[in-house]
Image 1: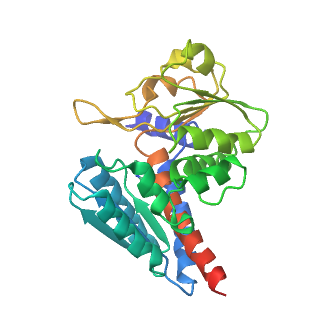
Image 2: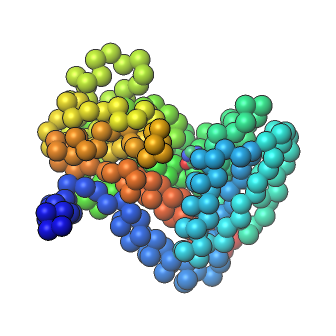
Length: 295
Ligand code: GUN
């Protein structure tokens, strides 16, 4: 028992492990205070099409977080056979309603719906996911307004754990619009030298072994091993993979990599809680901006 306690002390007090849950709770408490002082209650609507089990869990988590902070939330659940036109109409209704400051459409969408058309329909100022091409373009132009939540959460963790990016060599494994590309740009904006690797990258380990900061977002169970990591590196694991036994694992082989890394996020309890919290932060900010536009 004592040995387990000492181990826990070691990891927590020597800051080997980034506690995303604790940081998320700290930011949520701050947001709650801010919301209580606002003249308008921020509102967030999540639109879901179909019954994707992972999406159901995500959306319920977002609703719980919104409740805790004092954000009004609504989940619109549409059947799997909803047409694109019907979905666009629902978005349009929330675009026009000033009570809702943030609109998200949970991804993935059923195959018969064009994702790009849907994301483009959300008003950029209500696009709290930051997936609208205008917001993506602004981010790449270095004028970030709405930033996707997962990368925003990672940047918040860097700030809280005093990870400096200037001059560092960062490698991102994964090139998605939701995580890989935006986190690369955000780190570049902080003056890191960034390489984006992906499924077709040759000699991936040679690359990851050079990284001072390694961000992995590929959705492949414990893909990154201890040998792939530079001793002392900061390792951020965005993966959430449920194995045969139902246990949740990241894209990083946490048990072994934690012995090599200087700082590492666990799964669960790392990036996940931060993602939802940053969505709430973005909603609060969207509500504040809407007040400014009215004044
Ligand atoms: N599906 C998986 N991650 C996300 C996310 O961050 N936002 C939305 N809307 N859908 C997702």
